[in-house]
Length: 463
Image 1 (spheres, rainbow, N blue to C red):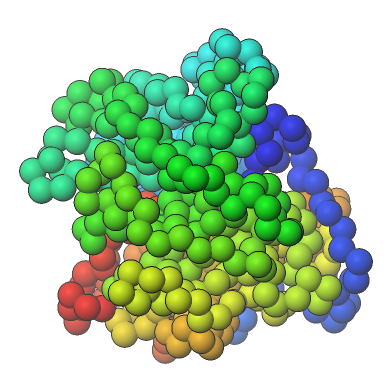
Image 2 (tube, rainbow, N blue to C red):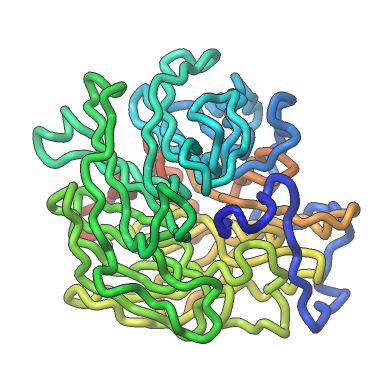
């Protein structure tokens, strides 16, 4: 979700709904708070948010082994998912600071803080970014004891950390160091630690044998001549990146950078180089990116309305607030088509393209994706020019009229896990000939912003 730095109420307190002019057809809208699915999707389980963080909203998810790590504006929770039908919380850490997006590596959990705090502790309170003493950046936890995670290190970064991306080192360096690409944006002249034009990312180097020595090692500028700032319809002008997806073994990354889409060469982990850059007149806010498994395609999302608007309706149309599919041809980004759910939502339902992941099906390009109150969509983009939805899960409008919905929906070892603002963690399963082959592929870790090539039955180097 977009956070306009310190100028909007945090999404944990309220979701601002920007009502659209035309209502959706009543026939398209499920009854309030009612779960509906396509015939090939089943709702396996709902786990309400644990009491310590029940009052704040869920955000991103990371996975490792038999555990899921769910971020929350109030901290994070760890879930035991070894038996998905009986998945259960193991622990919750109260440590406020939006968005608390999470990534995991070994015994380390990294959390992103893009909310100016009085200090770096878990007892901090909000403090204006105009105050030099304010802190925001990355918190690192030791999760070797799942029942009692320990906060071990903080790293302050310019303009905070809206999202973060883990990038393993190359060759032998992989055993020694981990790199964290920190995305942040929206500087202001009265923010001492977030000065314009910004237009850069921060890179934290984490010595794996001594993670408490983690520190910012580089701040490469992505847009030395400035980003896209004047296009009509932009939510906000480019002043950094919202999210970066790295495909480390292929030495590439894709940046969703507010008004721009970017490809990077990350062969030199501390010195990423922009190799391609695009804009799109239908995109208001480049939000996130997903490569195909063979890295010959990339899907970018447009978070029209910043996550708080009702944009899944006839008035907005199919090409805005959507996914854009690009083929990667000799390093160039070649636009092929848009994809957007066709299930119109009510004017009380914030809905737009959001976080998703690949479903590992050999020979196919299939994603599962969150759409806030549009729920979860399963869709096939094997034919880049003709994507189509193959399944869905959603709830009707909230009876209390509030916004919310699914922030992230990711496939992990046979099931889909969906983090809902208010409802907690949903476990879903798709049973479809198109996706059944994914059951043969197992992963021992999933950080969606750190793509790794799927390996398993029947998979080769070019899949």
